[in-house]
Length: 294
Image (tube, rainbow, N blue to C red; front, side, top):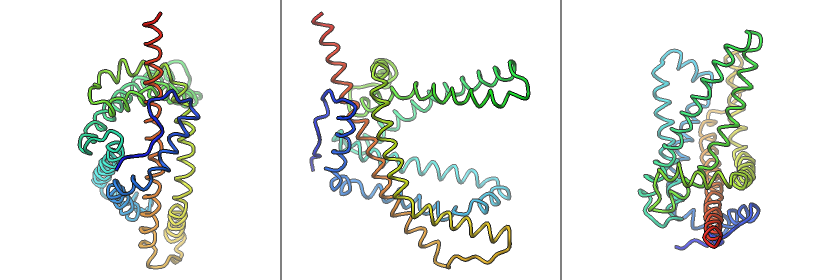
């Protein structure tokens, strides 16, 4: 089943790019659901099971104190979540690339892993610089404030550093001939030249996605808050639990439904990156054409 879409390889402005991403999502929601619902359901099921079992932060903390190996288990669960989300996102990009899901999984994994590794190295270097600077140039009364300011600057620099990879990662996923090296060289330079455009598009879409997904998750968040308040009353004041016996089952069902919907809302960011890739490609081609004519 072919996807309906606004032309990708077109010099969209940031507003047109955002509009195209939302139009793509709305026009193809039935196709997206029919082709990827199983992957989304597995991810939501895993997330709902974990959140239901770990809906009590105090109990989970007590278990971690009594048995430190639980931390390893939680790390394993987080790894499973990452794998499930990677498979879901790859199922989405497979509709764009028209290639098998496994091909997209490997492509996405290489792109995400390499960018994360480089970002972590850069962050570690900057954090080390901030630590030694704060330690040598500030007294004990101001060292924490200086460190906090330094962390804020690091996060800003990290944002500036990572954003150009949005274009390079999408190019690497969409084009079979693209290489990881190009993602860190030629594609990164192209993304850096259009940093403002990428920032405007992704910031706008991210704000919408954040508000919308949290609005969808609101029933689950309310139930989670009710569970935490009830537990606090039982553990700290000896009150009787006011929650019904079927509360965990209700929480599981609500969390499954809301996380399933929220997961699809988050795919709009992928479509925004898709149209960013097409627009930057066209702009780079126009720049090369002008250079040749000159």
